[in-house]
Length: 173
Image (cartoon, rainbow, N blue to C red; front, side, top):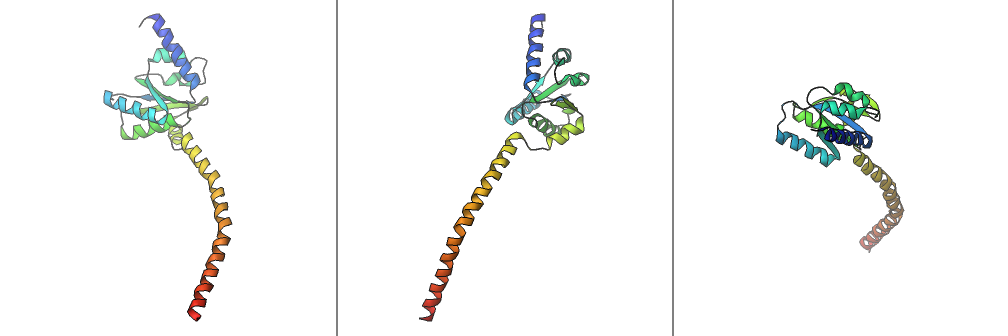
C-alpha cells in the first residue's frame, strides 16, 4: 500500500470515528471468511458496521478523536464494530461472541467514555434506539385507546342494562 492510499485510509477511518457514537474493539483470531461475512451481515441488519483495520493506521486515525483511548487496545488481529446507534454495535458484537468464541471483545468507547468488556456487555443488554422508539410510540398510543374505551363504556353499560330489563320483561309476560 503506497503512502497516498494509507493517508486516504486514515482519513476514512477518522471520518468513521467522527460519525460514530459507539466503537467496540474485538479480536477475531481463527474466524473463517463465512463467519466474518455472517458477522458483517448481522451488523448491517442492526445498523452497525464491522471492519478489519491495520493497527498502525487505526492508531493514527484515533488521534484527536473521542475514541483516542482505544489506542491501547490496538494490538494483534483487531477489528472494529461501530455505529451511530449507541447500542447496535455492542449488542451485535456481544451476541455474536456468545455463539462464536473466536470473536473476543476487548473494550470500547461510548460518547468519549472508555468501556471495559463488562461495560460493553452491560450496554448490549439495553434496548436499541428503534426498540425505544417503538416503546415510546406504544406508550403514547395507550392513553388514547384507554380514553376511547372509557368514553364508550357508559353507552355499552346502558345498552346492557336496557337489554337485561327487556329480557326480564319478556320472561314475565
